[in-house]
Length: 194
Image (tube, rainbow, N blue to C red; front, side, top):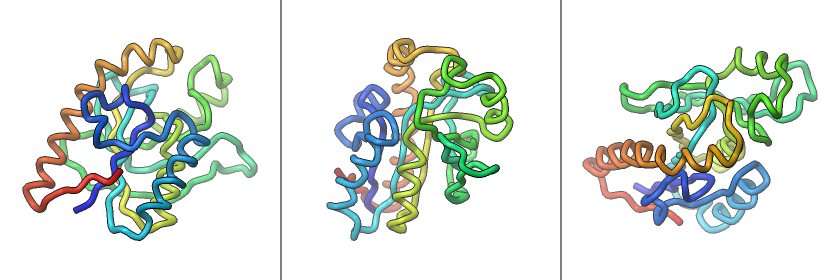
């Protein structure tokens, strides 16, 4: 079994960094990274596993989540937000399932006005800046996509505070991912694609 691990930055995955493909923060960086990765591996059969941090308005910091649906956002050209596809992900029962809003900016009360943020919060549980790109590449190339995220903030911190927190939180996320990988390895050997 081949797995391609993706995260935005090395701090999100700590000691697991040698197995991970980094997208950088934001959609533009993620798009560049995915174009380069797919130019090498598009014809291979593999699972895309996206790990990293998310902000959440209703989940406790340090909670590991399984993303079951992604809303792609950033600009609204119609009455409804852009929605790629619905993905039901097979994960262990101990992980909360979540709906993620993938934006092209850091979601906080400093960025979005209160009305717009409340509207978004009524539809989703958590927020990141790269997942919409990854899920679209997975869909375009027919790859299975799985995502585990850990809540790093409650939309109330700046990027510097996030950087400080993420180093500690990455240990919990990596421990969970290692458990998932151990279970998979019991069935068949795993090769990590870089």
